[in-house]
Length: 268
Length: 75
Image (cartoon, rainbow over all chains, first blue to last red):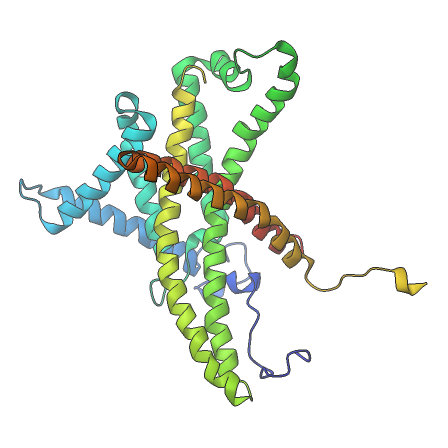
């Protein structure tokens, strides 16, 4: 820290990828191959699953004609995804059978993302790329499966790779591009988008809070005073994160729906 | 002779991320500008266009996020 004259020696200021390492919550497992089985992140994922199951079971256990508050919330989330995503993007006729999965996906991603800004949790499981990869693989397998089921394997890949209505010599150019964009970059961007948003969001909050602490520990009185700005920015960024959390869950759900729609389409 | 040796030290990933953010920055701007223009000309289409606004935004933004991830991954 010789090049940062105003910072105290022991302030952990520039946050980095090391801040995303979580040790096992069971001390005897640390360092063994089960070391990553019970960390803060996996506990949060189990917690999210439990909350969602309990919430939807409670909401629909005793449905009323005049909905209670929990039933109203569950119904409006389901209605939003069913009409706004499944109905509008995939289509009213074909899309509604995907609404339950899309709702589950939306709720799960929103809840796990929301852990990034809930006090004492303060970390989203999605800021480790393993969790978005699993979600993206499910979407990837699903849209290919749906396409093969609807059109048959040969016709599906022919439609996906060989665009009709262009001169034959352009297939040398178009087919590799279509292959890369449909079967390689789609799952990768789906996973990386969610991961990078949560990673960057957590990092940004760390920069402002740890930066505030570092400025508070500084020897210079003006820098000490300016740390208020840093803490204020941390609060502003938390609200910005709230927007990103919901937006990314919506984006993930909508892209899954758009890919399914592309696979269901006869030709594009 | 050492005058002509260019050397860059420190965190090159940061510079790479800065360069990677230029294109998506312009792209996101164009996406939102087009949405505002479309819904100003035809306000009743704003709800329909919002879906595709988010779609275009998400697809364009992916490149900047790749830059961010690679800045950390390629140390």
